[in-house]
Image (tube, rainbow, N blue to C red; front, side, top):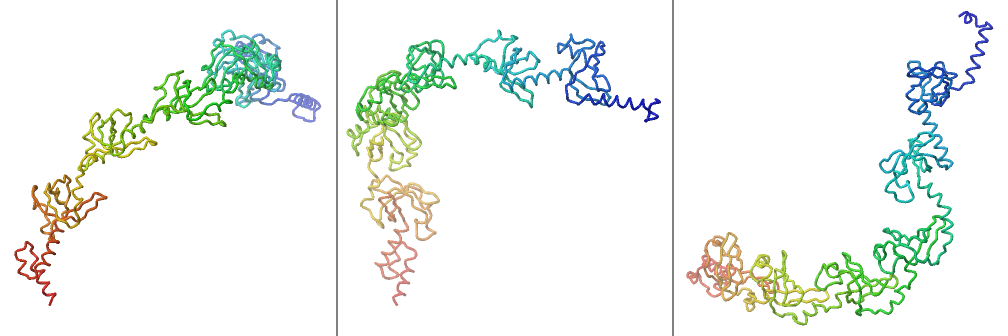
Length: 576
């Protein structure tokens, strides 16, 4: 302790120089990997000497054993550790050999990724979407996607488990510390040079003989050529006909000649065609005429129609709207079978769009035109109810395969049309009159009431203010329901306000039903089939006639009008 009393002491100055010189040589920073020498070993711990630290870092022996470093647990051996803290709250140095090992391994992976170098690893286990690969040199774990295991589908990879092999680093996430590797890329790299030589032998226009069908996809068919390369024939290049999937025209193992139509030296791909080996059938489309019948073979059935073949390679569309004259929702799947031959008429030929439209129904006579010839307008005939909805009946007339439309308003002259509609059911016989036929629109309208005498004809010789006799059918608070005498079966309503001139007499309860009385026609419209009847109007007419006929007050005493005498008196006063 004497050396600290006098700072100018030569001994102290010598110690200061030695201490400063030693500290200047060692650069100690937290978060760095440093080397430590084992200078003491106990049952549970290993003590390290690190130059520049004021105390000895301690490592757990189990940590070193788990890392496979049992052989290095010897006095004097050097071990790399990560300096986490120079001094914790207890004044001790915190280090980790495992973290140092992982960081060194990650650095090696980053370097290999940046230099595009393969690494050695082994598949240790399977996981969702792929496998886990362990880096042999550092023990770092990496993800191997299932699509990157091999260049061809593998059902079993047990022969690859725990086998040291090369992998290519394809993705590194430095933030999360994740690595993704590929075995497929290593396998492909060996074949790439050989494949490039094979692809370079092909040129556009070359004919490949006897290529074998290897597999199908939704976009085309793969052929194997001489066991050295696979080529693609796109769906559109299989046939001039419409093809939705290669299995419609080819089978696995089938051999076919191909024409090379594209060569991609960068992607090492060769595209081929089958249809270009034959002539385009659309080139002689001029041999076909519009509105002429031809034989066609059903090649495909769909929900919206069918695709037919006029000749090999020349496909046409038969739309569902051209299947039948009478069925609105005709189904080609129910009407035809695959490869069935049918007659069609060509409706349209579009050379620019390479499209041909045909019709099946045009090969048969339009039943609506047949109906028009057999049942002209105003023809009365028998029919049968085949269907109904909330406002109409659909009837079939004799053996003609068409439906006629019968609206509820054309069922009766008398009752409400919707009520009358409820009386009919499927299978009922009904007499109808043809009212309208539109063959182009496939419409036929018929009526039932037109087959009966129109009760409105009763008013043909009638006019406004004319008097008619009616019978009271029913009464209510709003007025009277009456029916004209003399053969008219129509009922009419007389409003309460039209019952009498005096409001006191305008009582519907004056009648109980069955009485006959005279009324005047207040309104008559033939075009609207409208008639208004009034008792009040008749009283006014008769009153006016009485005033014109009788000029004295007494002459009206016998008339059944309570106010007539007063009216006559007023008339005499006006004359004076």
